[in-house]
Length: 307
Image 1 (cartoon, rainbow, N blue to C red):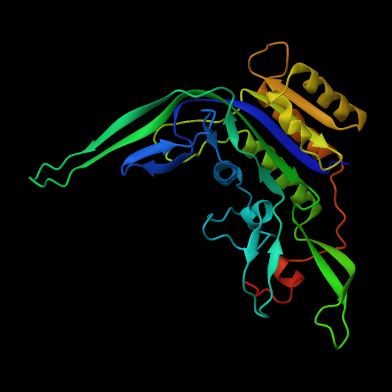
Image 2: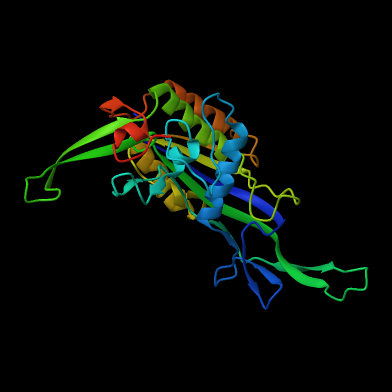
């Protein structure tokens, strides 16, 4: 039974500012860097790029990917609400209704110290106005980035409703029961897990890169269909050979299925083949589901207004 899907990968980015940082000294725009000189792309930006990729491939009638600044709580329809989670700070009854995100992403980090350059940007007025705009923009020349994403199938498309044994003198009382509510069909849940794999293989839309055609599509990947909630395999590509062997041995010992792909070695599966095999296995195997019933999110929590 598959409980977690993990993708860890290596991607090559050239002349990029995939996650630009704050401006230095006014108009000097800088790229995000660690103290050791390696550039990185934050987990938040990786999630943004993932959902842009998901938006491009989800063509199923009835589902959509909401804008990041206006996420709904219709888990049964909104894929960003389902995979990415959300927070309702106010409900009809004044309570808080929060849903934890099944999707998690770690920052993409360059394997070696990065070499950066600066572009000089000029916007000159030709009408005699001296209010010209002069700025510099920092770019990283060439980086091999390690990154990982994980999808918890226990939480995907599912919420937990808690029951408390309260008496007249208590506001809530002791927690006595948990009910698990799935917000879509089991087959739709399986389809969304497959979309996670496809979107992870097509990550491109990073910060300020709309015109520069930067891509983070991997040239090496390890996809793990795990029977427990584990993210240890995310360390695979930045580990020495002994640790890589130990990670594979641990996966084998518990019967997890994994797929390795490389565009650098003709004797191994290519990256697209590894993703295709993983998605095929995801369709054929049992995925984790312990739901007690199926309901729309707004019906799961009476305090949440229906849209």
